[in-house]
Amino acid sequence: MAMAKVVAEMELTADGKQKMVEQGAVALLVNISMEKSNVEVTAAALGALDRLSFMSQSQSYFVDAGTVPAVLHHLFAGWSHPNIQEIAASILKNLAAEDGIDYFLDSSGAPLELELHIQNLLSMQESMVCSHVVQKHLLGALLGMAAKPNAVKVRTLIRTQQGIPRLLSIIRRVEKDTRDCIIHLLWHLSDEGGTQIAALMHGQQLADDFVLWLKERGKDNIQVAAAGILANLPLEDEVLTRSLVDAGVLSELVSVLQSRNEKAQESAISALMRFTDASNIEIQQALASLDILPLLVTLLSSGTAFAKTKAAMALRNFSISTTYLSVEPPMTRSCLCFSPAQPSVCRVHPGNCDVRTTFCLVKAEAIPALVLLVKEKAENGASDAAINALATLVGDDQIRSKGAHLLHESNAIEPMIDLLLQGSADSQERLLTLLEMIFSMKGIREFYCEKARIPLVHLTAHGTLELRKKAAHVLAQLGMIQETSTYF
Image (cartoon, rainbow, N blue to C red; front, side):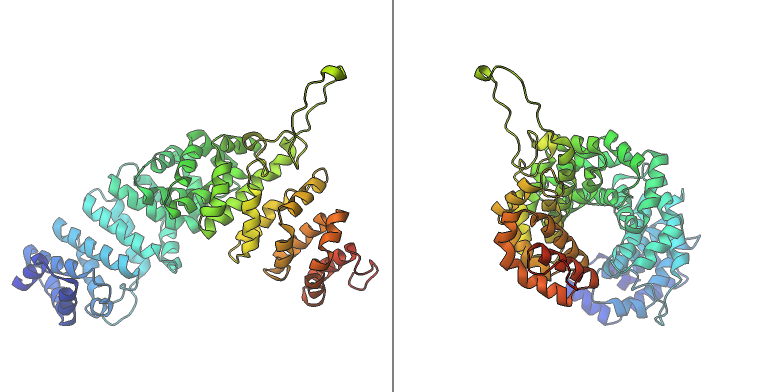
């Protein structure tokens, strides 16, 4: 007992702790904790183990000593003293934070029954006799187990054990630090459990809670997790989208988007995507009124690769609506001598465009940044997303001529041609469709004819059947082969 108390109380360096572990301290302390002794001895042994459980390079020692089975015994034994439960919960949290479920083995190296133990950990959250400290530590253990990218089994077990509804049922009545842990755990569960969370949000009216979580300034980690959950909710749930808008989520997400925290930006832009969908112009207008478009254009240059991709995708969604919103101004009939000046129209669209009202890419000055993304030839999806956004400038017959000439003047077409031999077959096919629309303009077609010839010929020889047909069609459009060619 004396040794256990010394380890629990003394100040040890990382090297000192490592030496103690290597000299057999873990196995000794586990054995002491499991002896039929008094509470003080058990607490001292567990306290010493707690101090040593932060050692990330000592996994084998903890596994060989049967640490996790011993800790679980102290947690779930009906007679366990509250102090012992708290220390045991802390050890479990520390080990899970290091290596997820890698410590969940018995002394022979056999896996423990995860389903049973996850069920017990979740049940402890609902126990009226479970202290706040134990509750928080056990949530931390669940979080550590579920947060690893390869922890699909753990996340599945938590969901099948009704973990999501159980966590949401207590989230409003737990203390703030425990609530924060629940939000993070729900974030990791939402990747595969977004539909379940959305269904429960309807019943519990949690939209207002998300607004509060997103408002927590100085708590970037909570904002990241809250926005991350929203990003994983099903996009097709229009009722949920409306409830989030009505609760005031838009302004909070836009505020998080302006954060200097890159992870916060990525979560915010992902969550905002559902509100940029062109099928709901009213919500697009609400978002545009918060000056979202200039922020998206800034992200194209300063964001992470992921944020750049999402920003380009969002701008594409807004630009789709521009065609319907930019209406040609009516001509006024009056005496020619006193005819008022007609409002200046957009370079591409027929109306007098504005960033807030028609979401115009030209007025938002997004074209140079989108072209730069195309030139970077990024393989992370950013270039494809930029091309898709620029394609909205030639997608409609009414604006195709002006849009194609703007792309030419912006030096966007040559880097598009350079990308013909990169990416997936789907992205190549979309790019061919875009170039086909651009080359419908005779002057532009003649300007890029030689530049496009080599990659198009390559695709006719080495592409998929659909790519060969499409590339041959563009070659015929350029006058390089006959429409009766066998390529068709």
